[in-house]
Image (cartoon, rainbow, N blue to C red; front, side, top):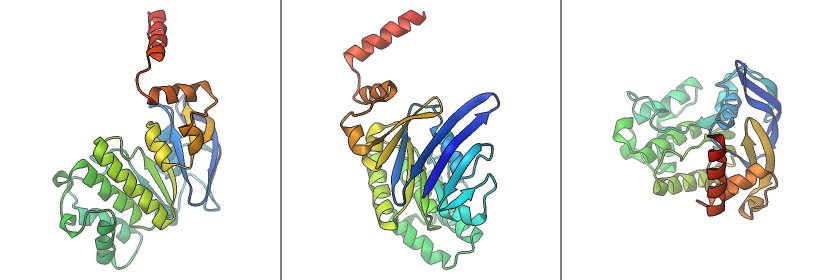
Length: 258
């Protein structure tokens, strides 16, 4: 469904994504994991069409993608952003948020589609005319997911969709996304720095650092600590919490820089 070859993304002299290549099969969920600033979200913004300044080859659903995208592309490829507080317009109620993309793409039966979508994301009719300030973080993210799905896309891009939420709410949103992915047979790319989220949601994982994909792992390899690259092993160790030996190594490294 998605093929990326030799993707380069720069901001002035800074190379944010450096010669990245990967593929995502139809109905597969591919994860990108790495520390903040490694290029994960920047890559997603190129795929969804928000960043037009890139070089390389991208194919989605058999179509070669250029920086200028068609309206049909934006119907087929949708994105859920990290911040549920910033991704919704504060003066638009839920009904307006969900109706607008339907109007843009000329889809009929808007009222019925909105009602159905609210039920599918676990909100229901009681939330239809509420404003973002009347919703919790988890409820806002459910609205953002509904907005992305209401156009019936083929590809869903997820930019750390649970990192701004409480742990208990994170689990609810992840279960919702997993169920929707299966029922709608979506192809997904999930970006996160949380290995637990990645291993729960993804079939395969690309480990990123300094703008490059260092290696790819299956979910089973990730869960069994079967990474090969030293950076991957550092991530795996860090994900298990504080480790006395690792802590000593980091302290020694910090002392050496002083």
